[in-house]
Structure formats: structure tokens, C-alpha cells
Length: 530
Image 1 (cartoon, rainbow, N blue to C red):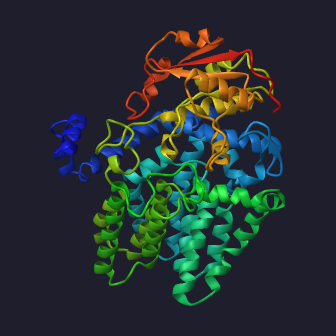
Image 2: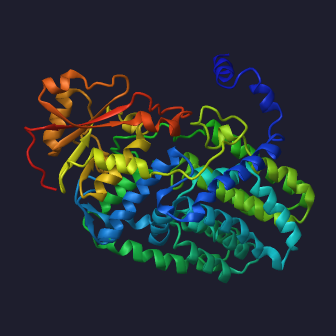
Image 3: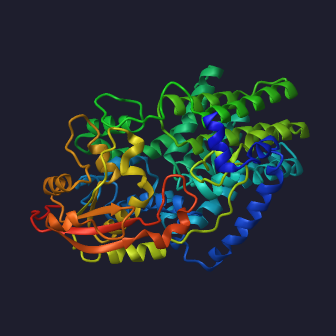
């Protein structure tokens, strides 16, 4: 009853009626939104792609995380160390999972890069034209084009990994035609775009090898495997690789041994969104079997990978698993060459937006939102001004509440916003803390503390981490709390987030109205040794 009341407050009395007619309404609203958003992308024709990291503020700020990694890898290389990541002197050999071609392209290409890759992925299904007529492939592609999953993939959820997904249909074509030379070439090309895609391809090929009792499918992974070994070489040479692997296993949830931060969303049960999409995929498997009297083996293997990622270890985000299953379902639809498969395909390609990644937008139930390329330029300029007094090689600590060992509560709900000062600080050779990889370095019991918003906690942390400045935030008062000046802090700069509130006006967790950041100095802090 409580859930129904919350639903009614959020979506009104017509919410249930809208649910009743979905996904039929999606056949009208999603194509309309697609045309609207594509039209909004016309400013990308004038270049300046690096100013537009994504298609909305939430994803745009999150993209800065990858910009920061790209910047450091560009400067120091995979064999170098960065003074401005992690806890300082961060060994970039740990970045073995990044494919530099796609990471740098995403850094400079942003929203345009995502558009090119998404449509490249869609058109790559024409590789089946040697076996199936163009018209049928086009019909299946059109069904995908106007689906909610394609819309989400293109305009909301993907990042540099999308370059690797462009070659995934070619991998599946090679597998389904028993042409593992093509599959191997496609996986190799995918390795320049995404470590995640290669890993998923490896799992698929391993499953096919076991089911066929043949080692031939495994040969297809070798070219990409050898290429990725070049990523691992600096890592293997580096000291403390065992500890790095341990931290990585903790980060993806595979190991909880001595882990300080634990994911509450990972466990032995599926969440409602994961279960919902699983059921949609199962209905497609059952319908396909009824229609063709053939078991869609690759989709079943894909479901296994989906469950592994959802319940055991997180090697890919949820949206990447959707893209994997979407590719497999489209593959079987093309091979079926039967129009009766389209209704079932539409169901699996157009799940309810509320349950597939739009849940942080308070408006979204059954209609995807309109997007446009999101410009980060004004945010960067204002943050550069905010940090202008911080000198090269100095350290800035931002004060957050203790997440109480809960991974999802790190950064107190402001995870996206933190990427802005982190990137700008790195750009001007300043060390910003706490930074994600620094948190992973402290992901063990009894690790040094970096959290706390009270005056005494901030002073202690600044002394321990040798920070010259601290950023504190308030979300109610426009004037700095007098306790800071009374304790000996001096206000250096102020960042008012209210002027950027439009980008998060419908966000479920982030409210920028009245949110202010203050950059404070504390004269008793020793000089940094970064």
C-alpha cells in the first residue's frame, strides 16, 4: 500500500493506466523522442565535440571520471605514475582495463563519439546480408532503432566502451556461422575499444567451446588476448601487483575479504530491474523456441553471463549486459526471417524506461526524456576560477560524511559532481582527494580515515593527508557557517551550484538548489610532499 501511494504521488492517478498500455505507447513516444533528440544534436555539426561529453548533466559529469583517466594516461603512459590520482604516486599500470584508442576518442569526441559508435553498432548487422535479404535486416534494425534500449544506450548509459560494442555483432556472426576466423578478427578489433566486450566475448566463446566439445572457438580469442597482454605487461612488472588484484576483486564484489566498503546491491538475489529484464528475455527465448523449434543457445549463455554479473561479480555495468542481450536477440530475429518474431523482439528491446536506467529521473515512467548534447564548458571555467588560488602540487581535500562502509553512500550522493573538481585539479597539476582510486586503496579494515564533515574531523584529516585546502559543502545556507572561521579557517572561494540546477532539476538524489561549496585554507597544515 505504501508503494502504491508513493507511485501515485510521483506519477499521478493516471500512472497505472499508462502502465497498462505500455509498451504500445512506446511505439509512438519513443520514435518521437528519437527524432527530437537527433534534431537537438545539430550543433555537433559545428565541431567543438570535446565541449559535449554526453547528452545529459548526470552522464556528462560522470564522463569526467574517464576524462581524468585519459588525461593521466596521456601524460604519463600506462607504465608511468601519476602524482594526482589515488593517494598520490598512483601506478598507472593498474589501468590495464582501459583501451586507449576508445578512451582518448571518448575524451575528445564525447557525444559525437557515442552517436557514431551507436549507429555503427546498429548498421553492423548488415553483415548478415550474405545470408538474409536486406529488407528483413532493415525491418529488424528499425525495430531496434525506435526501442527504449537503443535510446538509452545511445543517449544515456554508454561511454568509451561503445567503440568495442561496434564489433560485437560481427563476433556473433562468426560464431553463428562457425567462421571463427571472422569471430577472432572481430574480437581483436573490439579489443581496441573495450576490455569489457572482450571479456564477455571470451565467456561466450568458452561456453560454445564446452557445448561443442571443440577448442576451435577458443582460438578466436587469442589475437585479442595477445593484444591485451600488452596492457598487462607494465602491470606484471610493477610492484605490489598482488595487492592491486586484491583491491580490484573487492571493487567488483568478487571478494569481500577484509573489504571495508561493500555493495548493498550485490547479493544472491536479483533486484526488481534485473528480474524484470530477465523475464522479458526469457519470454523471447520461449517464443523463439515455439516459433522455430530451435533453442537460442547464445541467448541462454548470455542470460548466464547476465546472472553472473548481477549476482556474483560486477565486471560490467547493467546497461552493458542489456546491450549484450539486445545484440543476441537481434541476431536470432534476423536469422528467423519471420515477421511473427517482431512483437516478442519489441518487448525485449523496449522495456519500461523506469526500470532500465532512468530511475534517477523523477519524471520518467513510460516515456523516455528528450536529450541534447550537454555542454560542460561553463562548469569547467567556473571550477577553474574556484580553484585558481591552488598552486601546482598542492592538495585539496573535500569533506564528506562517513559512508559507514556502504559503497553506494560514498560521496554522500554527490558522486557525479565530484568528478568536476577532480578533473580540473588534475588539469592544473593539483591533487584532489578523496578520489575513487584512492578510496579503493583504502578499501580494507582499519585503513586510515579520510571521511568527516565536522571541524575537528576536517582538521585531523587535513593534517594527516597534508592538504593545504579543504572543500566543504552546505545545502541549506548561503552563508558559510561561522564555526569554520572560528576554528581558524579562511574562505578562499565560493562555488554556487544553483545556477547549474537546471541539469539536475528532476534528479531523484541530487538537488543543486542552495547547494554551495566553499574552498577553505587552514594555515596550520604542513606543506604537501606530492
